[in-house]
Length: 324
Length: 149
Image (cartoon, rainbow over all chains, first blue to last red; front, side):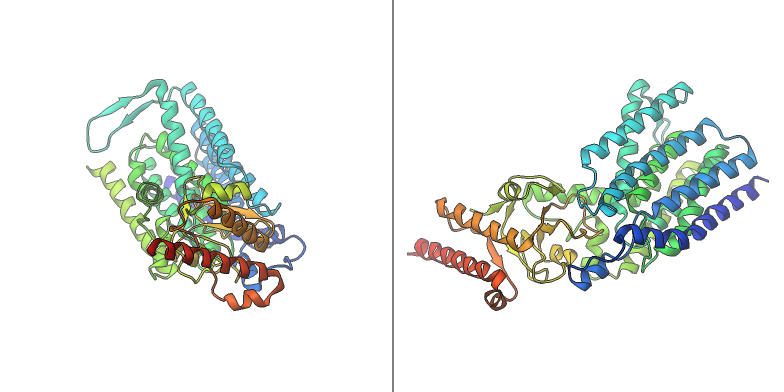
């Protein structure tokens, strides 16, 4: 029974995104360009900027509908279901505001980094209060050891750091066609397995709903992309994966399963630190995927390599948690 | 006496990316295809392949606020915004000419790079830029000669 629910959840997530795309992509394109393409500026530039963004809206719609529909098939949605949707939709809304200001109002500045951070902190704090009200554990377990640390109310800072950190990490990774869609599908798939292993079926259903939604999106986002997910999608996916890790008490395992996102973020931190301290760059461009492009790899080769690395990290994460 | 982020932030207060007033620009380039170590890139001579410019050494860019910054632009990458790139370049050059005229140290100067200087002179809108670029080049060469002499 449960296996069927999982299968139909992936299928529903996939189909909703795929069926929404032919309606949404032309709509997003119109939103991006208004009534006509701007007349000033060289033609080649217009071509470069021709792909509509904010495709994350389709992913969010698909995740929400699929999760509520399929969780209801199995049991009633629990507080974990609503926490997952709260963070995903909350971070998605922040990303949407940023995208909308940039795209529809044609302003490059969008939300300021401080405004985005404030929004992320507010959502994280709301999450913490609901989390504590339901007496969920504030312990953090260190994988491969017997060590656990009960952070008590300090856990709020941990939640803020994890949600803000991973949402921005996924956001940084979102720079090549299909890169985040593919790596997310793998990472959420891994968490679906681990949540299932803990009998947290509502978390597992949410995770596979995300897998279905991003795989459906990948059909249109793979190179050459017909649509980008924008901050709407990337911030939401980053917030969602951090929330799953917190609810399944696999906070540290997230560093392994989300290894691609972590490495991409580290490449930016190292690049900036190196440039500030030595005046030299470590990579030709950061985040890391751009470095490989500039050394001559094709976009497709970089993306497939990163997917493969993501898959290896996912297998390693499952192995450590389930078998070691 | 290089051009700095702080100098440009006075001219172009709208920015995204890292804010570092001490960041020095060794070059100002109007084309992405020119090698531009520690440069600020202005897409004046073509549509603006920012990724190529970064590959060639650009560490910041001046961008027309009406044009979308490429989606691949790193979040931390400093971008200044203007509503007129040609005027923006003129303003940068005027500011820099004034800066080095007051400076005692004139050896380490920011180089202004153009892939086709001849066409700058032939275009009315960019003629002033060509003249200022020549003046800056001469000032830099004079400073080097003085040092050797």
